[in-house]
Length: 126
Image (cartoon, rainbow, N blue to C red; front, side, top):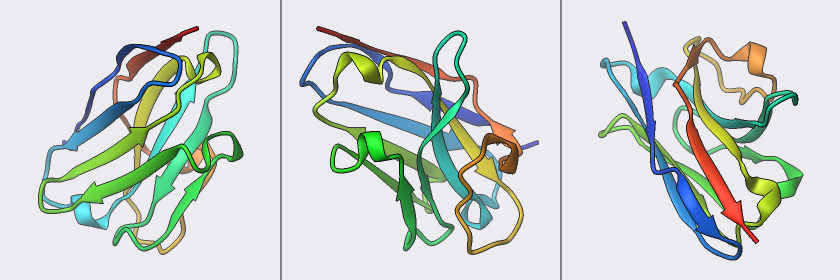
């Protein structure tokens, strides 16, 4: 069974950066559309960024455009989220997600993704 394991979260001051990683087990990572979501207590899980199977197509939430970059290394079965210029509003649990169906699309809704990691906490202090 494929598993997604996030790492790289932590506490950072406003203006700082973090690089989140999500490693996938299994040999079919290159077939998956990957994404990062985030969620705070009492709020809906929201898309942060998504990336197509080949990496040629990406999508970002408006709130993170120009500050976050999603990328993937299919040889390492890993997807990354480079975050910069962090602010307290970026504080959340960040989840890695995978859509395992073969498609060229990059979905924006949590229900479109069928595999999830356990999440990693990102806390930005002011």
